[in-house]
Length: 482
Ligand SMILES: Cc1cc2nc3c(=O)[nH]c(=O)nc-3n(C[C@H](O)[C@H](O)[C@H](O)COP(=O)(O)OP(=O)(O)OC[C@H]3O[C@@H](n4cnc5c(N)ncnc54)[C@H](O)[C@@H]3O)c2cc1C
Image (tube, rainbow, N blue to C red):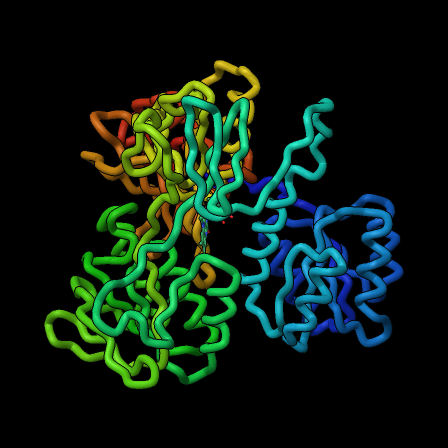
């Protein structure tokens, strides 16, 4: 046991770095090892290929522009024998590099110079996305068909779909997993060029085109998207002013105490926070030049990114038989009010056995609820009772969250809000509803022995731990989960 009751982090995975520049690979190795990855650095492609052939790495970081070897050949060679996830690193940053990398089968792509925090976030994301590759193939089943469709209307009474082309399809059982779309700003000037939102790759590329050191951005909204965009822009030396209605970033989800810690983190990174402000309009002739708030503040800017939430994309239903309320209402098994229609992910408003009705917008839920709905489609009666978890990476800081709490009557801290390294516990009538880890506690999904994994156990068991024990560093959280 480490001091403070923290268990040592489990090894997160094995990384092979195929990279010839020691100036990059040395700090990379140290940063990754600090994160709990086992790292082997291969100075040339052949060593790296050998390690891949031996099945050693869980992920490969491959320099596309190796001085003594063409990274493309290395990538092709890896792909002939292995589907190990690959992240391409390239110094050039050309769009063609990205296209080539992805065509060769890379899972992600990063332009140097990058921050270690960004690379580590990408590694985590790729490992999450590709985690299923090693899973055994399911027993033979009917081949699913994917069809490109626009607006659809669904008639559950006749088990029929009509596409916007007018084409009719029939189904036996149907899963709705249409996600969400970004809410758009409706203030005057919101259509000006230079006002962006972020959901699709194209929107991300459009924002990247705006980025250059010394430019100034207004970020509207300080939920997770706003916070992460603000952090990324600062790391790219773009000046940032944020406009948001609450008192602190993420206050709605994490409460005022952690919100204040997040505000301090953003201020330390020179983000100007206009808390309690409402956006009134954008000014500009050819493109956006300034944002105006309702108290008359004018913030000159080069571009804007709005992160003001999403709304679920609910298909049209013929007849009123599928109940809809803030998404598609589903029972514990992810089934709608129509027996053969299911929903999962951001679009589903789920009757959770622990938390009641919840519609969440998290990657881990999309993945896990999709599987649960699939099992239900095949006849399982098992309720989907996943203790929700999500993460957010901002600057070098990591937030991890387990459970679900929209209101609570007690908030307990273990660690230090002032030092911004803590676990926070949200209790309602004595029951632990949720917990947050700020730079502490590990990833509840990946660090099986970590404090956040213990919190997930406590939440899942509807535990009622004594607040004093939660706050006490000497008490091992696993002993409370017992
Ligand atoms: C920029 C960004 C960063 C994020 N970062 C994090 C993070 O750090 N951590 C985290 O936990 N979550 C994060 N999220 C949230 C996470 O990505 C979502 O919760 C997750 O993608 C939801 O999965 P989903 O399958 O329900 O919906 P989606 O991923 O939105 O997928 C829905 C799919 O359905 C398609 N579709 C919609 N309508 C139709 C139609 N009529 N016909 C055919 N197809 C249709 C859409 O095109 C889309 O491909 C982030 C989201 C964004 C946008």
